[in-house]
Image (cartoon, rainbow, N blue to C red; front, side):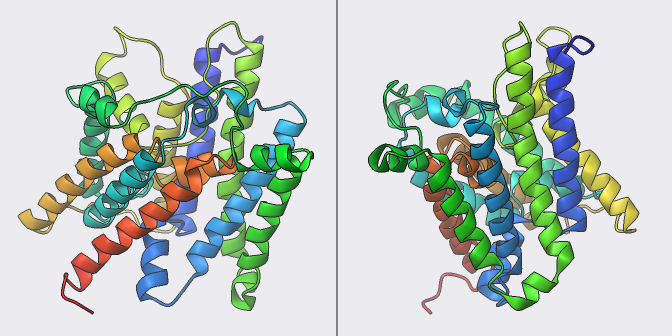
Length: 351
């Protein structure tokens, strides 16, 4: 920190973790919608098992770092706001449905953009602009009216591990270790998955990328006089923040962790696609496809803000702190995506 200012260190930390996530998407096929589609229609749970490996790594790492006072979980976004279950369910359902209609979540769209898919550029732009319209634009007042934001009381538990720790009189690290172990036991219960070192390795890499965000921003925040938010990777609002920065950099502040993360995923995906010889320019096949991507991107922008995170922001980053909202949002995203996939694949006819 004596050599690098906080305004440079934070985005570089986001960039490094984002590159790992981009590589995981292109080389490891780590994808939210792909994992759900495989489970529902491909009779394969391997990519969801990758999520379980990643969750185990980042949960254990986050709580171990918190136990060692390297991370202060109480200052994260997920701990500072009181949990609104209705917003989590509604936002997760909207995001998941939009993800299926668009064909990618925000993270997946950035990864596909790095592979030359111009359709994903449409998704990212629409999602980012819509997210900011809901955060601070013309839809902000309606959002606050329907889903008021309350600041968490200081003495309240900030997540499931802390709640269990209070009830049992133990350290939050112990419940977190149990959850991480449960994810790993389920993931490695499948013999074929255990034998696939590449899938296991990319799952570990994703977990470490999320952990690197927490550790890096915590270090910068505690060693700098600048105000630095303790955060890790998410891609709904950060996509909008990146667009805003590209338009107003000279008039506004410098880039932060989130912008580095977004650009890192694109760079990592580009490196991964080029290294495998998969890079190629792609565009929409017809107006109907473009319409679905516009519609799906807008829904993801709305849903991601209501749920306070996307499939990565809640499904991995918030889950790593065992925030109350994380499993609810993740389940709602799964349900919304299942509904959207059924509409696209089967229609809405009765089973």
